[in-house]
Length: 293
Image (tube, rainbow, N blue to C red; front, side):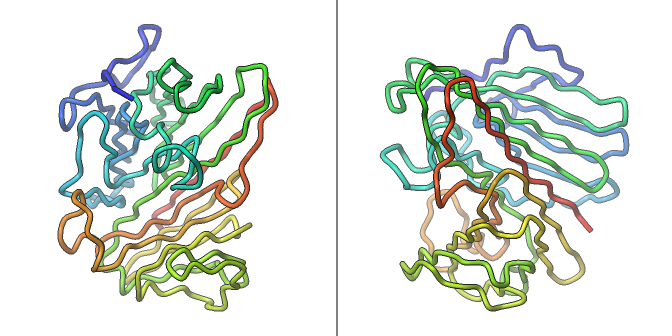
């Protein structure tokens, strides 16, 4: 896709897009209590989240991240759609994260929360690689200590289609080796590093002590990521799976700075094991809420 950093002419916003990194259009959402998030229309990607009362960002954004048409932004919360990872014929993680989305609205709600809704619809470019009419909406809400991101997909065509998807959340941590993930015990998972499936998590607290790339099936809706001095709780709805990923120190990624792996942990709400299928006129919804405890 070739994003043009434009927003819908029909959009009405309290928060207006302004040029961000690379000249890409960005929204800065600020709640009444000071909680804030940054959202790029390119990729519908949240790149920053600072809870109310904090000064430190809770999302990891690589200092080498590329903010340019055709490149995925390394960090924040990329949207994988209509394909998760390399599980299909499309480019890795699909086209949504490298497409320009239209702004529907961005406003401060009566209760003080800041919210933005952005939309992506099929086009000649998307249909060239994935021949289905659709609309996708991402809703970002920030208030207090919580950031919530919702994804809604609608089938606007005449035939059934299926997709996989994820909210590829990069959490910023002090050091990944001192970070534990709670809540996955007894969940079945696929270990992509070992290329083994049908494993069962036995650890009450999962340490990130090696490169890890796991898809947990039917994972519990509520998880906790704990490190020295702070905890982030994660609650998903609609997404049946959870992905835990960290590439480790040997990873060679042009858009991840040296040592960057140690400051990030991805805990992703996903539709990964089995595709979601939508009949004509049907809609699917999923969301992930992050709370800084």
